[in-house]
Length: 96
Image 1 (tube, rainbow, N blue to C red):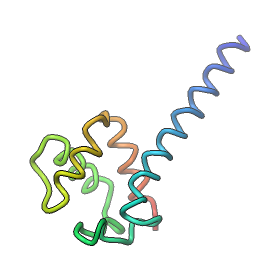
Image 2 (cartoon, helix red, strand yellow; image 1 turned 180 degrees about the vertical axis):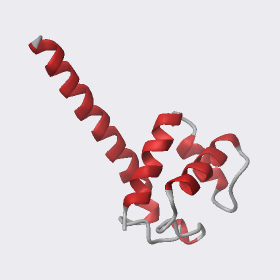
Image 3 (cartoon, helix red, strand yellow; image 1 turned 90 degrees about the vertical axis):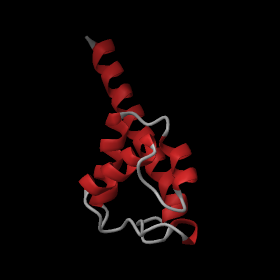
Image 4 (cartoon, one colour; image 1 turned 120 degrees about the vertical axis):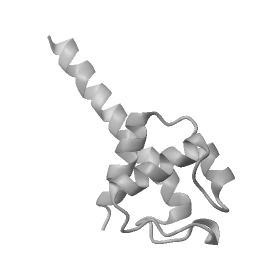
């Protein structure tokens, strides 16, 4: 029983750190509170709701969305799962 609980705690901590790392990677270009136009070219993401962020990330992934940053963002999202995209979208939208 202790092994199951410990394994669950470790898995949850790992998942949380992966999400934080994903957000940190995004913040590198978009700013700590997503207040910047990434590389001076993107839209400012701060204030977007989770649905809009999710739709844009999915669009970058499938190639149906994006302007001047399309090439950069496609590479950033190509390995994200649906769950990753939902999680990242919710976290970014929660930043005020």
